[in-house]
Structure formats: structure tokens, C-alpha cells
Image 1 (cartoon, rainbow, N blue to C red):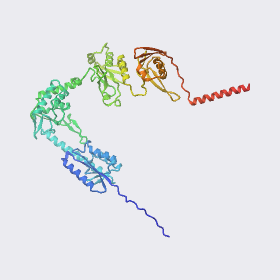
Image 2: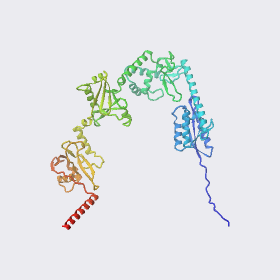
Image 3: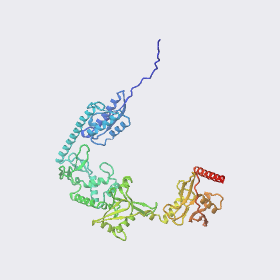
Length: 574
């Protein structure tokens, strides 16, 4: 018998298209131009889009950056998009375009292979997913790295040959223009250079000159703001004397590209009278001597910095950084400033980096006076005798004196107690009354009940009962020894209603008529009304037993039944 099976139609399965991107880079070291980069981007864009099985994912391109640097933003963005699953295949021209060195290349390619991203190198015809791909990459990457090193050495050799001939390697100097053979003075900029040198010899700091140039509208060589860093560089540049010191620094490693000062590792070349001078040699030497003098003085040499006798002398025992002075006003319009000294690391980066203790300046002065055996703190004596003060932990200052002695001195902050004067307390109380916080503990009693012994306002405490209800009491702040038992809020409402001659407590009436309540003792309250009258009210503290829970009630009922049963049996026996 024939058997017939029905075959259901099915939609054709389309192959999944691969998301393909390309990476391009042009190095200025090899004379490439941005036109070449544009050509690469255009080529890869068309190349990817001509393949129907590929989906265009973009071209990532870094302009004029050496492959041995880490500042390749587009390359980093490419790797981030690969990790996000936006790319399946990466196309690149050659190994030398892709990574800094052999190790970086292999690490990057292995990571991309692990997440399923294939890398194809056009010049070497290598696919990272193939069996012999990694071996070929290791060999060719080593060649590429050696080629980079060789190119770097060739460039260094050319630069050093120019040094021997008296030719510089840097041509962008404020005050001069390079004409292809030598530096030529730019008159307007030369006036500013002379002003900078003149200001410095008159005692002005680089920061003060920076402000002056900003007011004058003077721009730097690049057209930006004239920074104090640029001013200091001008003050140290010997080229303004018409002479040149060549090979003051050198790049030791072609991978890191970090400039290292030449401290005798390589020969230097002094080129005398190489171009017209802006500053005479005598003035330049005076400036260098002044720079050395100010460096020795440190912050005390800079008049633009607000310093005291403690500046640069208070050191953090945790991180070794100097403490800095920080001031805060007691109120918005007050002229009285409250100063503290804090670790700069803690101030800039937070407590997670350094949890050293802050110290108020007045307390610091007092501790210094004790350590030096003075009745009152004396700045001159402190500067003359103390080399530095180390903040050790939270309760000790270690004084290192110029004569070699080390004096540990314990201290305790009284800043909160000193600041919390009756005037400050009254101001805070008035502010709290006018600006109550949006909290569940703020009621009509907040800020109105005060203690006759400690002088502070009572605070509202909330505690749950066994029954699940919440009980509210008004008590003095913690750490006081007033001996008051606390006022139950419901009882306080009852007493207030009696004082105001109302049947039920009303918040609006209470706020309108009562100015304050003083807890005189555990048996007496003094009501100060807004009409000026005072009413004394006697009260008695009653300790309320907690309500019984259902479980406790059940246990007690069983005990009562058992007691009743025993008593009934005894009566029956009798």
C-alpha cells in the first residue's frame, strides 16, 4: 500500500552576514600624509561593501600617530566594539600598523580570537583564525618591531648628526621664527620675553606674570592662554641668549617614547652666537641664580601663595604629603574665617586614598606651644626651632626640631565644643524653627523643648513596642548627664492641652501660643507662652510596662489553668 508523507514548505535560511571593520593608521615618522590615510579609509569602505556576505561595521583610523605609542584612541574604540559584539572580522594593512610590539600584538590577537573576532593582515596574508596564524604572527611581528627600532635609530642618528653641526631639533620657540637656517627675532614677542625676565628679577612670580599677560591679551606661541608653565620654560631657555645647548634630553626606548634628561649619558653641544639674542647672558645667569634661590625656599619664595608659618612643615604620617590650609566662614556674611589643616591627598582624592586627621589651626597653635614650652604660640620661635611636624594617626603630632630632638605630643580636638557657643546654639535653634527638616521626627514640639541643666533641645526618639505600635519620647541628646527620664509624647500633649485649656491637643493652637517648654526636673515643666506669661506644670514620670504579646498571653493562660487545676485537686482531696 502506498504511503504518502506531506512535506511542509519552509522559508529559505539566509546566511548570517559577518560584521566587518577595518583599522588604518598613518605614521608621520615614515613621511605618510593624511591624504594617504583618507585613501586607506576610502579603499576599505568600498572593499567591505562590495562583499555581499559582509556587513559594513566601519573604518577606524588614527592620524599621524606612531604605532609604538599608547595614545591610539580609534584603536582602543575598535577593541571596545569587538568586546561589545559589534565586529566579527577586522581588516588591516600590515602587522606594523596594528600593534606596538610583538607582545602587544599577540595579546591583542589572542584576546580577539577568544571572543570570536578574526583579524586579517593584508600585506602578510595572515588570518588569525588559521592554524599557523599565530606562529607567522610571532615571526613577522618580531621583524616589524625590529624595523621600528631600526627606523628609530636612524632618526636618532640623523638628529645627533645635526647636533654635531650645530643644528637644533626644535624650531617652535616663542620670540623667534625659523627661516630654514637660523632663528630670527619676532619683535613683538621679544618684548614679552623681556617683560617676563624683568618681572622675575623684580620679584614677581610666574603666576603673577600670567595674570598680567592675561590682562594684556597676550597669547602664547600656539595662540592659547599664556600659562605659568610656559613662562617658567621661557625663563630657563638658554636660546634667548643667542646660544644653544643641544641634546639636553634623549629618548631611551623607542617603545615608550619617554624623554629622559641627559645627565652625561650622551654628549652635549654648546653652540655659541648661533642667532640674535633677546636676553643678554648676564641677565639670564641672574635669573637662573634667582630660580635656584626660590627653589631652595620652596613655597615661601612665591608671594602669590597665601602662606603661614605652618606651610610645608605639617606632613602626613600616612602618605608623606604636606598639609594645606583650608578656611570656612562661620556664616554667609561673616568676616570670621575658621581654618583647619588637612592632608592634600585626602583633600584632592578623598578618604579612600588617605584617612588622615584634620586639625584646626587654633588647636595646632596650642599643641605647638606646649611642645616648645611656650605660654603662647610664637611664629618666630616655631620657624626657628621646628623642621617639620608629622601627623601620626589621629591623636599624636611628632615634632622634629632643627637640633635633632624629636618630641611626640598628644592632642584632642575641641573644635565642636569651642564653636558651639550660646550664640551659635541660639542661632541654630532659630534656624531650625524656621526651616524644619522634612523628617518623620519633626513635630510641633521640635526645637521648643529645652533642658534646664544642659541647655540643649530635647530630641524625639521612636521605639517599637512588643505590640507593634511605636512609642515616642522626648529626651536630652546622648552623652549628657542630666538625669531626666524623658517625656512621653502622648503625656506631653495632655499636659499642653491642660495648660492651653483645650479639650484635645491641637498642633496649630500649640504653635500659635507656646514659645518654649523648659524641663526643670522630673516633676516640673515650665511653659513660656508667646504673650509673655509663664505657667509651671507638675508632672510625674510613669514607667509604662510593655504590652503583652499573644504568645505571652497564651503562656500566662496555661499557667493560670494549671494553677487552678492544682488548687481544685487539693480541695477535692480535702
